[in-house]
Amino acid sequence: MLQQRTLKSLTRSVGVGLHSGQRVEITLRPAAPDTGIIFRRIDLPHAVDIPVSAMAVTDTRLASTLSHGDAKVHTVEHLMSACAGLGIDNLYVDITAEEVPILDGSAASFVFLLQSAGIELQNAPRRFIRITSAIEVQEGEGVNKKWATLEPHHGFKLSFAIDFNHPAVDSTGQSVEFDLSADSYVRDIARARTFGFTKDVEMMRANGLALGGGLDNAIVMDDYKVLNSDGLRYDDEFVKHKILDAMGDLYIVGKPLLAHYRAHRSGHALNNLLLRKLVEHPKSWEMVTFEDERSAPKGFAQLAGAW
Image 1 (spheres, rainbow, N blue to C red):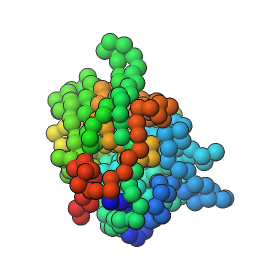
Image 2: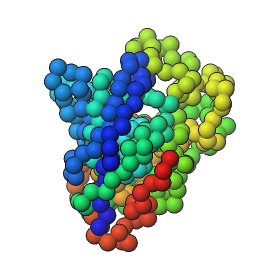
Image 3: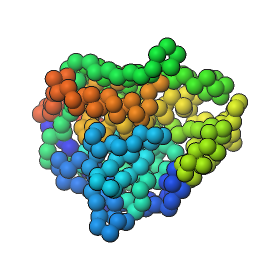
Image 4: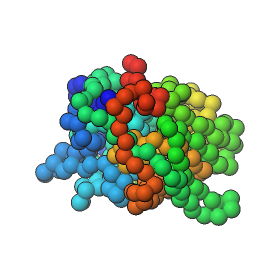
């Protein structure tokens, strides 16, 4: 049986929110089978649980925000991406502010935290959403067109293309394909950092955003070049970060997908629209488990190696 996974022990980290600039502590804790991933705002007068689901996403401006009632947690996508990449099904995330810490701007620090705590198999079957007919969303026309699709595939594969019309971005890879059955999330995707442009920072900060951002947790560019002294971690780090984000955004549906995700210029908003359309069209997918691990797609049965 392909089993659900949680952590062996709890683990903690402290950082700042990318947009809020607030100090925040997170504690990642094991959870029972079929719990899913639940963010818990422990700084409120009464702790509030915010379960991940496509319909719990209430804001997609620059990040993915989950809400339950008045309680919110911003910028969940990098942690969710790490959970998707390592196959974590059940987890409590205790958090002391309304934004997940940005740490180094990638998912690598979350991967390190999860693997340091250890991953434990649970006595319950892992449930997958298997796409049986294509789902597509799109926005804009012509050069402004953005789109994302989920298509049937025995495994999990993502294909993404970007188009920023910026010298520093244009000189790197513009498209990438990541296949969980053949590639390594930890090696190939997890270290790709978020990125931004100096011309946008002043406007964002005037609107109370990017208050915690800097060269230590983002790739920053002026009109021509990357300003980080250490350069890029991957030759195609920009588009790989879009894959990283998409993996986190898609995992918000609450189960791993068996699908081929293809996208052009997509982002948090379009990714969530895609999930909502999926939920609203139950005839386009089915829930499956694998009693025999040998019948499961490659890449899902193996536990990720140590960091």
